[in-house]
Image 1 (spheres, one colour):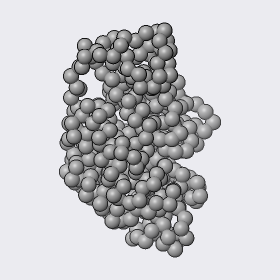
Image 2 (image 1 turned 45 degrees about the vertical axis):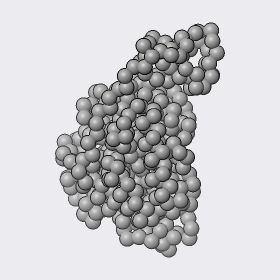
Image 3 (image 1 turned 30 degrees about the vertical axis):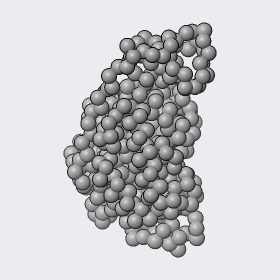
Image 4 (image 1 turned 45 degrees about the horizontal axis):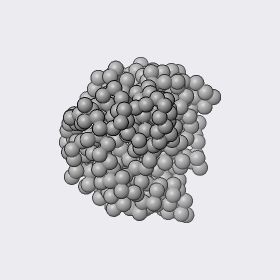
Length: 410
C-alpha cells in the first residue's frame, strides 16, 4: 500500500529537499513560485499521463528529477500525496501538513519538470493520513478542494488513490467518486485515473474495490482508467500480477457491461519496484513481463511506486528490509523508470467511449419502504434496478448510499 515504506525513510528539511530538486532541473530563476507552475504545460502525446511513476517530493530522500529525465527519457511524474489537513478541515495539503494555497516549493518542482519538456499529474489519497473524501461533507465540497489543486498547478491530469482504510468508508468513497465526476465535467479533457488495491483472487480486486466500481456505476462516472496495485497481497512475481489483471478485466466487463476492448482500454496497473512492504520481490524482468502484457492488450496505464525507491541499496538487498529510498534488489539507478518511459513513448492507447447497455426488463420486485433488504437484494425503483450493498430498511434508492444503481430497466 502506498506510503507505508515512507515511515522508516529519512525526512529531510522541506525547503532543502525541494530546492535540490529545483536546482537539478535548472529552475533557479523559477523558484519565485506559484505562477511558474501554473504556466501551460507542453502538449504530450503517447501514453505519458498513464506512464507517470509516483514521486514523493517532500519525503523519502526525493531524487533530482532532471537527471532522471535525462537518463531515462521519462517525461511525466505523479507527485504524491494530496490529503486533508492533519488537524482537520476540508482543504488540500501536501501530506497533511503543507497547504496547497501557500505552496511555492512543489510549484517550483512542477515548473522545472515542465521546463524540461515534461508534465505532472498529482495523486490524492494513499495509505496514510486523512483523505479529502473523509474530511469533506459531500461530493461538491470534495471537488472544490481538488479544484484548488488543479487550478493552482494548471493540471491536465489527476489521480485518486483510493485504498484502505478510506475505501472501507462508503460515505468517503461516495464523496471521492462524486468529486471525480464533477472535476471531469468542469475541466474538459482532464485525465482522471482511479487507483485501488489488487488481489490474487480471480476478480483482481477485493470486496471494497468492487464496491468502489459499483459506486462509480451508480453515479454514471467513467475515468480514463482504473488501475489495480498487484503487490502486498501474496503476489509472487509477474505471473500472479498478470493473472490479477486478467481477473480485474473480467470484473470491469461484468460491472459496467463493457466489451473486452473497452475494458482493457480502461484498465491499468500500478506496481511496486523491488521489495514490497510484505517482502515480495519484483525485479526488472517482472516489470518487462507486465509491460509486454500491458502493451499487447492495450491497457492505458502502467506506473509504479516509486521513483524515490528506484536506486540500489547498500548492500543491494538492504539486509532483507524494505526501504522508502531504495529498492532492496540489485539494479542500476532508474532501471524501473526506464520501463514507464517505454510505455509513455508508445502510441496513445485509444480509449473508446463506453456504450451503455440497452435497458433490460424490470424483473426485480418493486422497492418497498417497509421491507427489510440485505446485501445483494435487487429491487426496482423509478425504472431502474438497484442492488442493496448491506442491510437496509426505509432508505430510498437513489437517495441513500446503500443502493447501487444497476441501470435502467423497463
